[in-house]
Image (cartoon, rainbow, N blue to C red; front, side):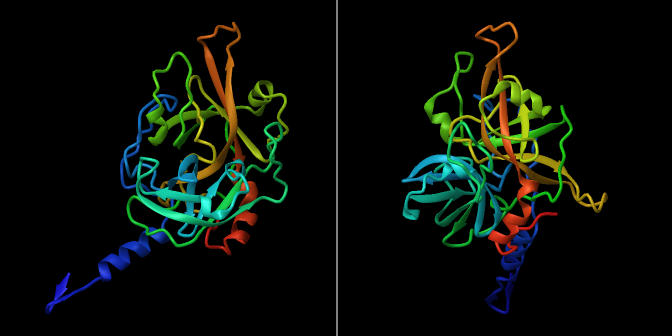
Length: 289
């Protein structure tokens, strides 16, 4: 806007403020593809809160923006190395694109055990050195105060990870592209049967799975997303909530044990169980509702 020869920056400031205040809104019409393992790449802006997490310049995990200075991810993504090695990229559907911001510190939940066979409380918050610049391709996702899944309901996942097996034609370059999928919530016994050695409970974890669908290597820390309105206001906007954080998973053979018939399962840290901790760590810059 130009007034008497001066350029007004008020519209730009207002827009940035709106993006920071709102959560869980996308500015594209998102129709997730039913495949993430070797499936459809996402379009930039589909999931504006998703970031790639880097260690020594290499993509290692996925995360989600929950406030301009904070990213939610999995604790297993942090190897307790010096902070100078960690950074995130936001605002792009390519792992090395968009804004690059260094990580100031990583906070893991008190009871996290860095053991692949024991994954309770696999959740972490990354505080950034400088705030992200919000716009239509960089925004935050909503966090639910309460959430209980219904088996077979659909949810979305997206991340910078690809798994491979003989039925999928996947190249290494696919690991750097954001991909998405629709999976179903499962009864918790589905995951317990598939991963008997893991120590976890339905209180802190959500079970999900679908045939040939699931996050792969590099997708750890990514969001399990469910679209709903504010439970206290049924007429409010439909928004995306991060109900879970990818902790681990894998593939198992079907009942006939045929090699080509794979079924995936994924365990997600249940975000609603960590709301008090998230709000405390971020000094309520990120809140649940």
